[in-house]
Length: 333
Image (cartoon, rainbow, N blue to C red; front, side):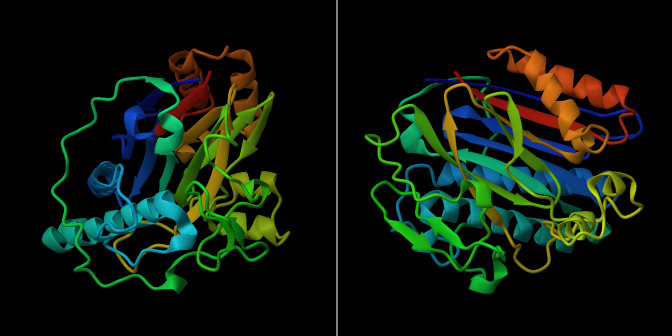
């Protein structure tokens, strides 16, 4: 199998500056988008601090095991990659807090975040193509000097709590400490013998930046927004159409804001040949419906991720381009 990917960010039609940041590191299996908030300069800083911290920690922990000196208590039920992502997001949040302390003018800045991490075991069976130059490491202290995060600081899905350790050979466990998406909660053995032709991966997110899975001509959300309107949809107060135009549609209920350690939602995904993963900021999803995004994916052949990214950005701009637009497409061919 081969993984091909592309990323594209665009100012949009109405913003004076781009407050989105992204990371695309195929050799690490890492792809992330952060959408900054808090005003022009502060939003740019928040999203860049977050992506730098996430990239740096994931790179720093490439190939480690549970005996590594983790900055948070290691939680076996999350598996190695789950612990890596939760720690990366937590360190990103703390880096934002420290930056705001150092520069008081930046207080109030925050960012959303969505991240795909493909397991290293799966990557070893694939080749990757993309620009993987990355950026220099950000100076970070990964020692556990910061206060540990408590179990209740992770989101727990109300309707489902069954999840699994993603390390090879580990049996399914019941997780009480992190949220998982219902459609992807299945007991899985990710050992090479059982997963030939499939890649285990994990999505982490906070806020309303999104991840989607395109499979067999269907677009399915991997993430669900941490936003006020999404909560109203879930309890039947708002329809999806009403939510798209509601005055509070941009109000997020979770973010990396430098306050308490974040509630990080984790969603396992098994990637198969022919799949696409799309991760994006709300500059794509605010002007475009899921149906419109699906139509663009359907008419763009596999193996052309750059063309697909451009088509998505163009469509968002043609629909008004109300915000910065960032998209990353990852294909398994």
